[in-house]
Length: 414
Image (tube, rainbow, N blue to C red; front, side, top):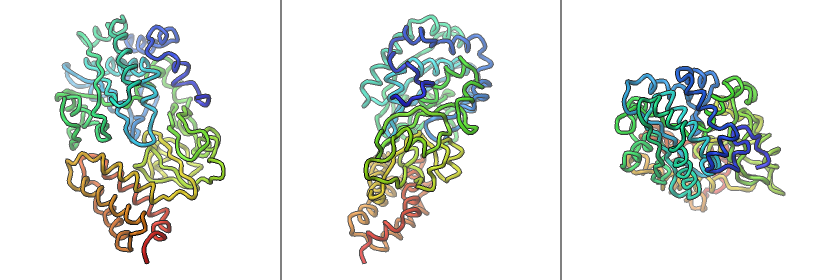
């Protein structure tokens, strides 16, 4: 953790679920300022250019504003800590080591939107994060700041931890809502969007854990302070989950906009001895691969999108020369096939067929028609599901064929 720049996490990693220690280091100041001028919160978040840290980087203020404008009544703030995608491990760290920061961010969101329900949706397979979050919630419930939030929203605030389904698909925002309601986490089509019809039909904000962890600092220090933390015009910092064939895998908090080259070779220590960089799966295994020619890319939402990929969660899975791209992609598509909820036949059947064809090719049993079938599926399947799972599976297959076609062809039977 020596490479953290100590902005989002600072020394809070030693605090855990100790609320008094968190407050002694300036925690709670952002919430106190929010309560002084609730009407200015969303504008400040907009000026800071805070983006969603769990996927596509959607502007946070645009999620909050329609819920704030909704009529008085039940409203929900949901902290999405399901995090079950390969290569992503930032949210569990935040919930285990800085739960008070996350909760404060969620309470600020509640003040901004006048929401009277705050739900921390946590993966039950992560024992330490869920225990720390529950302990932190108990401490907040007896604190005067929490009571002040209740007074602002016109009564009391419900603050609770809800274990997620633990399934990959359970992290999709409409599946989160279904799970909180007590149902199976089936995603649904949008619209209606959660801001209009969320938990039990009430206006709902679903934010990633890391997104909410940024909020207290913005309210405490101001939007310009947050913007100045970024590099090359990007705002704030980002947690990058770095793994794979590198010397120092780990969680790195760096300025948003840090180059891929800097992350891998400076902070990650470069490749394992005797290995050379080949590619990286960005944002987990559901996006276009970046290769050697992309090492100069700035790791922010817009710059990575210009390379036809996505920053996503900030996960960076590095692979080296000599590693079979076909085998890696087969492993990840197998994960997607197992993670499909089965609600949409093209998704369940499509991911299974992708997996079957990839395994045939990877094991040397594939023929030219198998590769043709893979490419045909990549053209037919996108948009056929209610969520993005099938699109993610297709993207990684299509990208790998486009950039490493010779590896596929070398494995085909004559």
